[in-house]
Length: 204
Image (cartoon, rainbow, N blue to C red; front, top):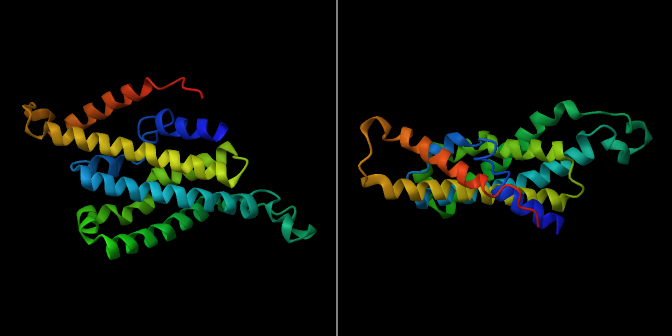
């Protein structure tokens, strides 16, 4: 039940976009088309599900103070936590390269539509933010970290697909010239954020 609560909370309450404003660059740029937004959302979700458990294991058994005690008594005082940020980024960049090659191989149309934003997943702050939140919250197990990654990814996916669907609907609306494009997108994002605030207080 605790993991289910974490899963629901990470989707609706601690949403990466509306609660922490993470991943906004690709969120705004790739949300013009639902199909493309869905593809990027799936890629980001996959990245979070893969990299957060990997970074959890890395942090738990290598980086934390005393994490290397399993190598012997001579390593129990070793503290590699200062390498945390660069190691998290290395794991994310490696996984991004794998995702990019897979999408190019099996979904070339999606690969072309995403363009530069697919390799930029490596520097998507939502993914790095997920790893840092995992470290900060000190999850008990790798499974809990995986649940958190899945919930965070689905929350980001819902946010970008929802925005893309609205932007497609308003494409032919009579929007004042000064608000067209990014202006109306920011307003819609703010309204969606307020809507997601209604989920605050959910506890299973």
